[in-house]
Length: 266
Ligand SMILES: NC(=O)c1ccc[n+]([C@@H]2O[C@H](COP(=O)([O-])OP(=O)(O)OC[C@H]3O[C@@H](n4cnc5c(N)ncnc54)[C@H](OP(=O)(O)O)[C@@H]3O)[C@@H](O)[C@H]2O)c1
Image (cartoon, rainbow, N blue to C red; front, side, top):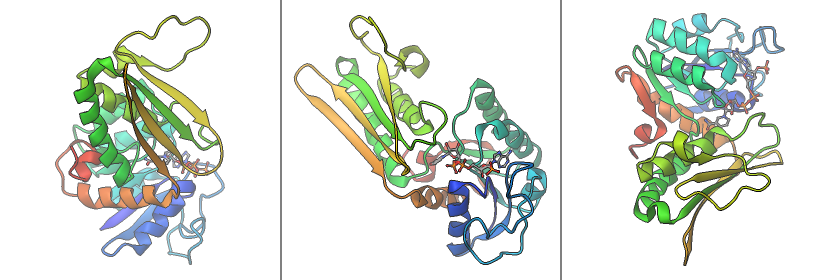
């Protein structure tokens, strides 16, 4: 299976290159990086610390797509609309690990999913996705009487908030309660805010350090508090999960899929 990587010179992109090369049955078909950036033209193996693989990092996502059975995209959000347009044109499936989308990006993803199989994957860890399944169930059982809060920590580099994972956790709590996240999310609290409105889902964002991060979901009731916690300690797990998703999505009909679909946890 030929796998192309968008954002192959980045932190996760480098790990993806290593993971694809190490995975039986998978072959690197190319990689892209930011047009005009320092990685364009060098060998795809170089940022990953590998021997040359004989493919130059490209600024042409269309060419990489044409050479690939599937794309894994861990670039940056501003590139997403163009990448989704190309997926729709070519029908090549994409595992979309990039996060930090705005409403236009989400619309572009939905449009592409009419013509290509897209795995929208804000967190590719198998265990995080297993916890999402449990969180949805817990949220449904406990209901609105338990105040739901997401405490989310990410490395200091992450330039937007909340993280893609924090939003996925909050959406999952809302889904478990049968609510729409846009109606119940509280992202910022400051000053005289009054009592906590019932049914809301709060996200508190912590930033620091270099290594991935963690999520804690707190369901605070009158008499007891239920917590679910997750912490990643090695970002290589994201590359592993993304390659699993790439292997899974090839041959799937056009639609938007989730990592829970990939792991059979939906
Ligand atoms: N799904 C998950 O489980 C998961 C886990 C971790 C991170 N993420 C997300 O994945 C993305 C990448 O994270 P990261 O930590 O690897 O970030 P990073 O280190 O900043 O890497 C991003 C890479 O994308 C490249 N890039 C920028 N614009 C591009 C374009 N138009 N086409 C192709 N490549 C482009 C950058 O090139 P230059 O180096 O030349 O600037 C950079 O190498 C982020 O959105 C992050 O939030 C997702």
